[in-house]
Image 1: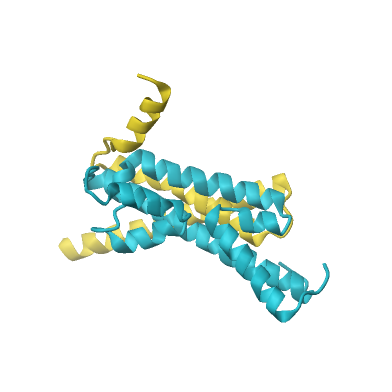
Image 2 (image 1 turned 30 degrees about the vertical axis):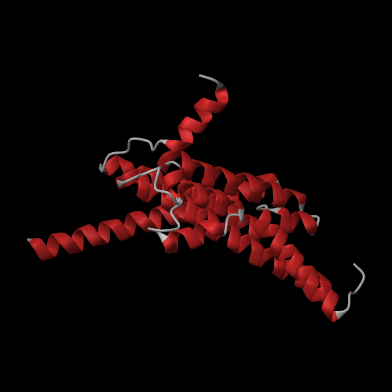
Length: 82
Length: 133
């Protein structure tokens, strides 16, 4: 199989991803993308260290906030169902 | 930067927005913001490609998933070409790969929309001589 055919095949057949708790980890690369692009639009001058720091802080903030939200929802569901 | 006429100013902002839509980051490149342009292009292209890798090109579905398709179109008009290929339904995709792929490609499109708006805003600020971002 040629390289071109291999690449085409990669993008024409979906990956196998089960409905498991681990599949939630797919959100992490997306959050990283959001953090990087958002900070790019916010910083008028990009200095590597400062840009990296700001992006990491935003990435951490989003992940922590989502984790807290998930915990609150789990606690809420537990209170209702118990 | 020399001041343009009002019509020239609006035309310049339109061109910046259009370039940003044609190729992610090209709007910033027109404003001579090379670092911004490279980061935007690489990040949005990678996010979009990752979505296609996870769910296949079948996730671009102009018939059965119109709201997602509109967001995906914000990446570039080239997405419409993929939409023409998948319109026939030859690339079916279901379940988690479909969800994750659609989310990745749509978020990439919405991020590009943010960058387009940002580039147009910066173009406007520079023309009016305003300070700041």
